[in-house]
Image (cartoon, rainbow over all chains, first blue to last red; front, side, top):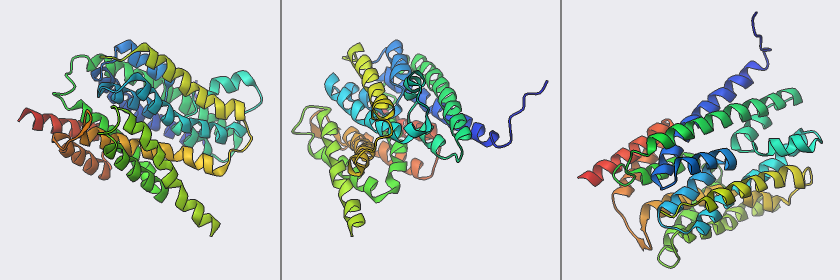
Amino acid sequence: MKFRIEPDVRPVVTSALALSGAVGVFALAFGVLAVGAGASVWQTCALSFFAFTGASQMSAMSIVSTGGTVSAALGSGLLLAARNGVYGLALSPYFGESLGKRLLAAHFVIDETTAMMTAQTNPRLQKIAFWTTAIALFSLWNLGTLIGAVLGGSIDPHTYGLDVGFTAAYITMLVPHLRTSNGRIAAACGATLSVVLAPFLPVGLPILASGLAIFVGVRPQRAKTAA
Amino acid sequence: MNMSWTLVIWLSIGAYAFKMLGFVVVGSRKLPNVLAQCLMLIPAALLGAMVFNGTFTDAQSIAVDERAIGLLVAIIAAWRKLPLIVVVVLAAATTALLRAM
């Protein structure tokens, strides 16, 4: 017996799997870096399973590893998670009324599932795109984290430059946000604030405070649409 | 180190709360455009901050050391569109090498 996938579904499934594979590699890096930052294997895996939002997990870990407080780490992690709320708004109309299904689907509302779902043109493909990406990505994200966390235990973070490994991961996450001028302004202002404020605030808080940069970033476009 | 379950648990609860807030609670009602725009700019601001704060500060002082070279390597590697794992390994390896010297 041959398992057949309809022709219009195939490209959706293929790109969902490719995307999840790439994210799995990212999870591997997260696992190594998180354990290097002082988290246990269990804590690292729990974050990937329950928080399931990459940039937030990373930022919380790196703030703690540089000596920031738990509140500062939590604050920046939550700020980064806030955009998932906006994705939820965007995806909400695609889902039915069932509350149970919505509560379950909500856990998988992240950058990748949003991008995959909104790229489809009909409801059937949208649903397939969301769930294929959600399941494949969630599985590989957690598998990658586990492998990375187990491997990471044998590595001394400072000697192997893992702190800069974190930074390099942020660079790759930052790139897509630099496509718009608002994104570039926000990134530049955030970067500047985070260094300039460092001597005056406890470790971790300059990163939180740099969130204020969004107000500088959002201005020009408003002016443009008004004109 | 002061990594704690408190952080793991609250981050998990908070992350889910945000996802649910947009998806279940607010539903199809529309968020003011400016607010949505602000929220979408947070990653750019915070990622930029983490890159620069992580590279150019040491505790509460401003510092330029091996990390700056590691960052430069990461930027070049990302700009050449190399895969994530290669970018991370190159940047970490450069820094490790400079620290060992």
